[in-house]
Image 1 (cartoon, rainbow, N blue to C red):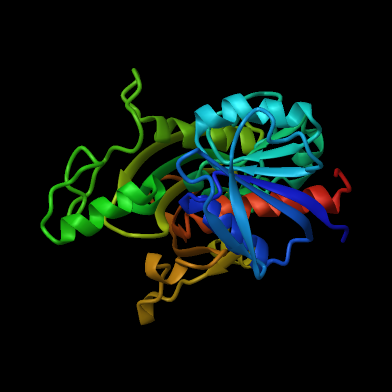
Image 2 (cartoon, rainbow, N blue to C red):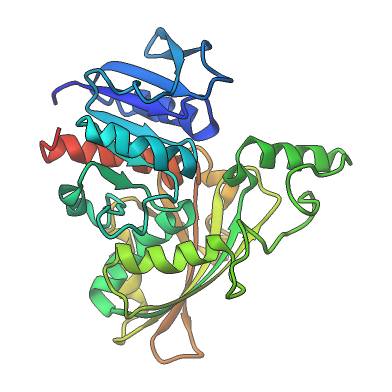
Length: 332
């Protein structure tokens, strides 16, 4: 595989540092790497592949050099301004913010689900929301075989999804210190409030899951609803997903489909208290699925419990996998 020049935007943040870790672990073929951040972190050094790389301040001229791929994780406002600048200079941007996800001209990609979509890029490819990514991996094969009629998401999302401030609030709260970031204490508590509330009563996070599910699966007929909750867990999101299909199924066939799905690990042995746990998923790239059972309240329904590391598969790993697809399809 040929080597390419890669830029990381937001290199010193939680996801940015995980980008570096994932690129090293997966031995992504890098010739030169450029790290960009805000002025606050510029000048610091970051270790990559045994070398110390100086972090540069991001500006309009940052992409005036030979860069093929840029991985962005610096927030929507940064992506809105700088992703088009990078794309105009021939850089393919993989953006982790919500800025471009619902743009009809921007592919929204989960590599195990819709890899061919990267071929339709016009300079920018969007990384889905973390909670959407982990749901799509097991839902895609089931949708293909049985047709999704309705999806009900109930999420239990780790504080790392809020970045370092969320983690700090949890750690402080356990010590009895007041919360500074969340509107209420997160220690020993659950907050049914992720992102801002919209006029329809849903939060922005909930609407992300609704809209992104339909776009990634390319099916606007699926009925989707969501309730997203922040819980006092450091890393890895958990989701209770209720599915109603258009066609009947055998439960054993559901297990077979998921066992044969790339990126899915089945953990489902109730007799031994074996089911997906956040503490087991943290630090891994698989999407763990368990508690798979028929929903007897509808004709063709199931419940499942889905857990994944939100910083890895829910952000950094998925983005690096997209970059790998660009090389696989010879798009750079």
